[in-house]
Image 1 (spheres, rainbow, N blue to C red):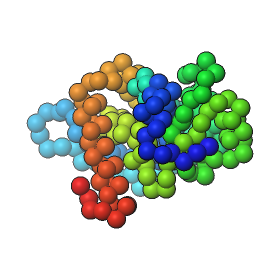
Image 2: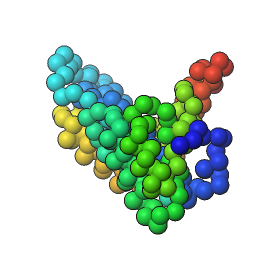
Image 3: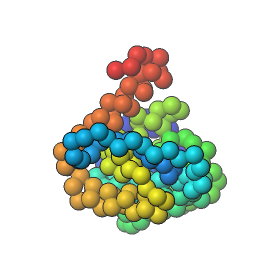
Image 4: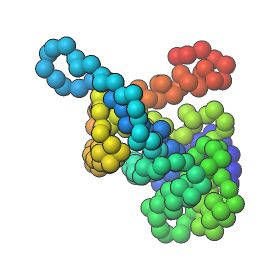
Length: 205
């Protein structure tokens, strides 16, 4: 395991570089957003005083070289779910050669079981510094995920929400260079850079 230095894995081995992070919590509630509709007063968001569905976390994996995003929803973060995600990343490159996975230093991403498995299967874990989510390339792809699956939605349960999320992933991986996807990624990168400036003592962009 190592602390990420600059963008070495991305610059030197882009086809062997991957990223992992959780996106959430994903609750079941009406969410405002934009979309196509008749010209009139927008519908008001319904109130949800009793939320009994709990939350989910999308455990996302991203291949830098292939520009492919995938993942699953889990009830909680944890080392077991992190290891399952790392195994899916390793399966994407089954040739046995080393791969590099960029992820933040959350405690759920560490542990003896994870480090032993990573060493055995030639998976180099590259941890970003604390408060440096902007260094993880998967973060920019969570912006379109939020825009196309969460915004302007009112999913009745997690099953429907998960179906919408995976429908977007299938479309996104087939249309990775679509102008709407690229625009949402640029917007999210700008937001992340602004967050970087605030947390590192600068001013918002």
